Amino acid sequence: MTTTRHLSRFALAPVFIGVACLASPALAQPVFQCEQLELPAGNTPGSWPMAINRSGAVVGAFGMYGIGDYTPGKWGKTGQKRPLAYEDGATGFHLGGINDDGYATGYNTAWTGPNHDQLPSGYIWSPDGTASRLTQYQNQNTAGNSINNAGVVAGRTSLSSTPLLYKATLWEDGAQKYLPPLQAGMAAEALQINDKDVVVGWSRLTVDGEQTTHAVKWVNRKAKDLGTLPGHRASAAQALNTAGVIVGYSVGVTRQPVAWVNGVIQPLTADQSAGEALSVNRRGEIVGNTTTRGATYWPQAGAEPVALDSVIAADHPCRSAEGAVISLREATAINAGGVIVGYGDATTPSGNHYLAGFKLVPVPAQ
Image (spheres, rainbow, N blue to C red):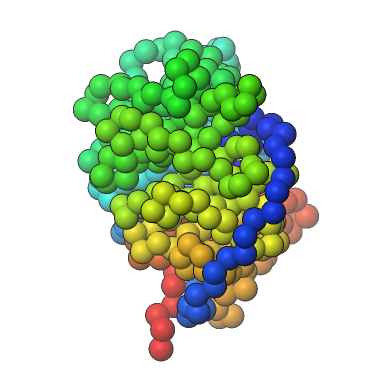
């Protein structure tokens, strides 16, 4: 399962070319201990942590065992868990971000019952778990993908459910503002905003007569094309830190994780394994996924990628509520202290498979 913000929804058919080998700085091998992200009593097995703030509070989804019925939830910095409020009929929640004050943002992907014909709605959750819609316009499809410490939300709006009509959008002090695409009239989406109000995401554009999608950075609401790896035809920027390091992916034959450092794109794997980078913290540590490693960690751009499954302390493995070992599939976020959250595969005693969340805390060097 891949997070709904990923650009794979466009089913691009790009052309492949090889990429240069990575530089490999000699960095200390990390070790993490895994903490279980438990669910409130009565919840269906499964969880999908999506974002973590500086203090360690996590937001995500509860109840991933049932298809499409997951609901918004929060784990406190010491592990306490609770559901977040949501509207009757709203389901399939994706939570994009949580700031250091505990305000979170996200959206639902579907409606049931009498509301089934409504468009998905974006929300902001207060630290006490109450929810309010991002916009008062009931005919808009909205999504909150990120929230910075000033409370500015980055996401998208549309009058339909098709990504080809998305508008990159910011919500600030109750005002809804649009960010320009790379080319007029094209779709775009804002995926993350940092504390300097720099925004990254993707925008549709026409290159050599064909439509594609490129990673974009907005500064002062002006769009800059971040480009792709040589020979690739599509990319997306999914996260950035306050130092300006941007991470995401570039699409050739497969989607490859990349970073933009000082505006220059570089691959994050030398073996061209498919994957994507999803989060980067202020220290430059990066997490995401690769096909050969599952949940993947980079100490910094240019460093050798590390399979997180391989650096879990033996006395603190990742286990599900039933005691089964979790196979780490994707690391979705990393905070300023290097704490990582994500999800993996687990199995119930009866043999049913589901997604189980994990939280990895760095073990201090001896």
